[in-house]
Image 1 (tube, rainbow, N blue to C red):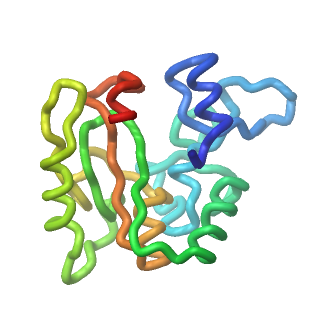
Image 2: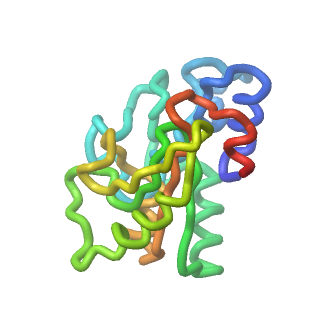
Length: 181
């Protein structure tokens, strides 16, 4: 888990929390203007525009003060550089999608694009809590624009065959059983 403190806060305080617990205002209390969306904080494509991430502390997609500003992202990047994996999977919720780069519409997909063939086959065997198969999307087919995210960074920065999955069918947090099967 790249965001253990944020996940704990989500499980114990509010199930809509998605950022880490960076105390942005340094008041010692976690509130709505705290935290950084770690899936918007990677150096690759960071802050390309304000549609795929936000400069506003109160927004759920607040990208942080600068690229890779968060210790979690710095540690993950160091791990990727040391281990050099061939493939990564980033797990999120809640669209019921399997996806590949790029989540920002301004970046053209690689040529040839290695993601649709494998991604489509993997998506077919993944199902949500209603036993509905996932679909594969990438680039402009992704339902919203995102920049500074891990799937894009893992491929764009490191050349890793990177995929992500949005677990569930639309709730902020899918049932526990969905994330464990």
